[in-house]
Image (tube, rainbow, N blue to C red; front, side, top):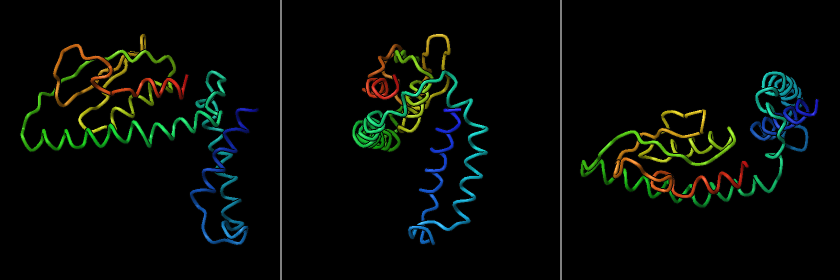
Length: 169
């Protein structure tokens, strides 16, 4: 039941944040928006509770993890994305590419951590997460410029795993 309540409240907060406008209640929402938000949050909670809380882990409810996540987005991730954009633009202009698929072992244990790393890699230009080896959480990455057949995790995604480990594990 706690899982359902947490999912409901988070869904309702996100919904109300997204539809905030000039309304009747506190100048932000209308009665219709609040009722619709409650109905949609109940539906989302019924569907998503089992997915979000498969292992009954509430560690991501810790506000400190959200602060670290925001620092990760604003700092290392944004810097790596800007650097990768310049590198990809250079490779497109000069035609100096050596694409290939490489395997990395980031050492992350949780599904959320592996998913977050795979998403971060995919969002960074020049790399694309292709597959995950579910047995040992290795990632297969399509890389625009393969410089070595056995790259370290740092070659592909810098210090992303370190930050993601702090957020999710």
